[in-house]
Length: 335
Image 1: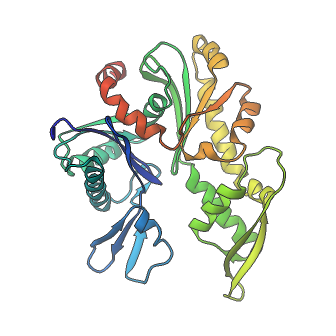
Image 2: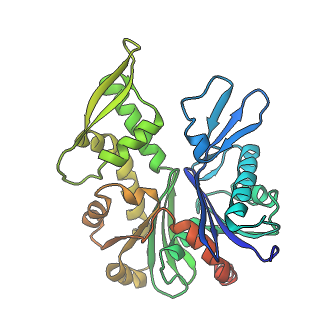
Image 3: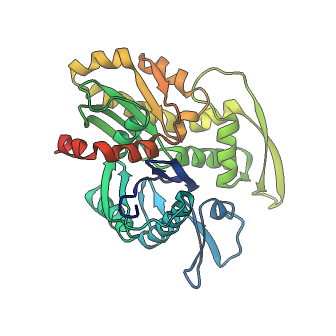
């Protein structure tokens, strides 16, 4: 029972998810680690660590060891993975010993970055480690027929990267990966509020603004939200009111980059598959698919149907776990 444990891990910039073949998603926690800067000891991982961001004393820092979908701090990522495997083992009701693991990597990552992910998982006690490209995992998780010779277009808007890929016959036909995702949209909001209102807000506040009043570039009924932060002139706490149209403008440039990546991928598509895209459309996955109005905006811009995956946040993790059954076919197709 121990040796046949098969799990899929979506090692994301914002969240790490673990999928088990028998139980589905067994763990979904933010990719955040709180460490003691003096002893380098890991104090908390996941939700507990995320709640500490921007609220810790000097010697404790909450950091995100993954940047743009790849490992930025190898040792801390390994520590985080060990804790995550331990938590996943508890959820599954036994300790995971020597599991077979499939981990997804961004399609634009280098061989060195892939090797780092492979080694980090192997060092956590995995028996075998397979790497699968994120768009393929997202397509499998969104119930697309990736093994058939038809065009499956996936737009995976994650925390650190946006991946656009056309998948047919188990492999990637055309793909573009840009290092713009949910984190960049948060940064855009922080920068805008600082420049326009001289107000400093944290990344968690920015994320909240994006979720509540962030809209893609479509017409919508304007809504407002009260935001608190620190006034850069007086240094005192201050409350302002933000409008959804302002936030739309703040995020405009990053959203247009995402659109550009989708267009570039569709331009590279072989003509035989273009017909399929007109019929089948494009599937949105990742946290970015939940941005208000993004589905309508994209379908207007690229003039093909745009659908949102059944559970966009979990698509990659589900696909990573499910791919265990087809991994050898996929690897053959890739070769």
